[in-house]
Each structure stands twice: as C-alpha cells, then as structure tokens.
Length: 357
Image 1 (cartoon, rainbow, N blue to C red):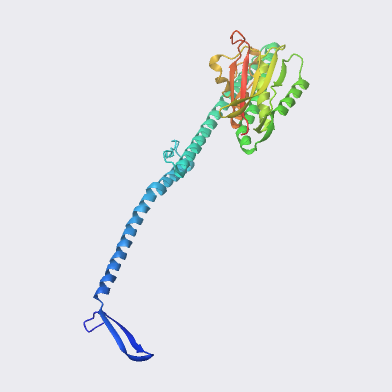
Image 2 (image 1 turned 90 degrees about the vertical axis):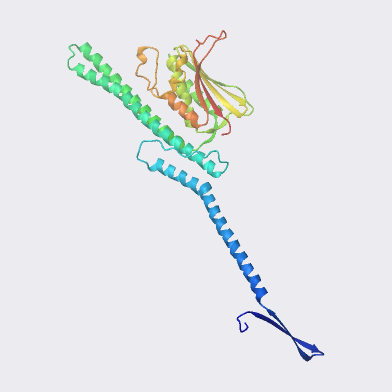
C-alpha cells in the first residue's frame, strides 16, 4: 500500500548476461483494476449464493408441498384410523391420480383401511347374528321349561322334554359351527399355500364317501375330465376338501334317498389364465331365483319339511365361499336345466379356482 492506502503491485526481475547480473527490471501497477475484478467476483459470488438460497427455499417448499405434506397427511389419517376413539369412518386422502410411489402408497393405505373397516363391520354383524341365532333356541327352551311345570300329562311332558333336547342339539351345532366360522379367517391367514393335486383330493373324497355310504343316503359320484396339464393348484388342501364336503352335505339334505349327487371336475381356459371348475349337482327341488345369493349369507337356512328345522346352522355355504375367495376363486349357485330348458332338475354349486396362483 502506498501513502494513500491504495494497493500497488510490483514485480522485479533480474537482467542477466552470461550469468552476470547487469541490472534489474522493476514493473509497478496500481491495484484499482485488481480491486475492481475482486469486487466483481465478490458480487458474482454473493449473487450465486443468493440465487442458491432462494432456489433452496423454493425447492424445500416444493418438496414439502409435493412429498412431505402428502406423506404427513397420509400418516395423520392412518394414525387417526388406528388410534381414533370416535365412530366416524376416517378417510385416507385419495392421491391415486399421482403416478408415483406416494400415489401407490395412498392406494395401499386406502385399501388397507377399507379392509379394516369391512372387517370391523363384519365382526359387528357376526356378533349380532350370533346373538340372534343363539337367542332363538334359548327362548324356546325357556318356554318349554316354564310349560313343563304346568304340564298335566306324561305325554305332554315328554313332548316338552323332546323339544328341549332338540333345542340343546341345535344350540350345540350352532356353537360348533360358529367356532369354526370365527377361526376360518385367522387360520387361512396363518396357513401357507402349497401345491394341491385336486385329482388326488377327489379320489380321497370318493373313497371316503364310498366307504361311509349308509343305506338310505343318496349316492355321491366323483368324475373328472382328462387333462394333459393336470389339476395342480396352489392352496390349502384341508380347506378345499372342507368346501367340497360342505357342498356335498348340502346336496344330500335336498336329494331323495334313491337320488344321486354328481361331483365333476374339469379344466378351462380364459383370457386371464387357466381355471379348475368343480360342480356339485343334486336332484333336489332347486333354489328360488331370488335366493341364489341369499343362501350364502350367514345363518340363512331353508330346508324342505319341518323335520329339517334346526338341523343346520346355515354357516356351511358362507364358510365355503369364504374359503374359496381366500384362494382367489369364486363360488356360486344356479339351477340345473334339462334339455327343454326347464329349471327343475336340481341345484348346481360351481367352484372356480385359478391355476398357478
């Protein structure tokens, strides 16, 4: 710095000839130009920092509005659905229009919460149905017991005792079937799907029914169409066998003693893949068209003749559909038609199971 405080840059270089220093070259320059360049660089650096800061603020805001905010909304809604004490249904924000991971997360959470509420409603409905169904035989037993005290003849007392015995049996069947129905979901969730050879399963069931056939019971015949691809699916063998047994038992209750129940299996191909189709045909009176879906409701039972009252809980078909749907399949009922198109030859229950799932 000179006396005025300005910068002065000086460069000195020796002047030599044959390694002999003849003198020196001294070059000086004022620092104003250097100061200007430094100031310009500082301004540019500050401008870049300001732009970076503003950009960071906008980027942070955009990330919050586009990512952090929606994720927080999803988390808050999920917490409200899990920890909420009110009975209002919590709605998860619908972000399915977004074609990214947050949109997929929204769809998954909405599906999970919907399944949770459906399960809660199913439990509530199941508890109400159980209470109603158990109350009926208890009310009948109470009336019989109260009447028993004032019955005057042995014949009347014996009829009341028979009625009480019948209600006790009905109550026992209800409790057994209710226990089975309440365990189905949990057991299906715990059990692991394994390859199931439906051909072997059908042969085993055919042997069981042939061995245990009682006099006066309708015959049960099993058959399957030949298939080069076989009948191997992924599932739970015991549960699939339970479904077929339930459908056969249902068919037996509607078929005459000298009648026949046909269980057939075949393989079909659709646009979405191959399926195994199992049909159970009976020779009963058929199903009213209005009740083709109602019969799968819990505790729904309609039997021909008063002697059948109370001998069925009405849970077999409901449990069967529940098991088939857990295998990604379908179960439905329809009436069989003869060659003339008359729907009076009995009922048909059809199971459709996907192959390779």
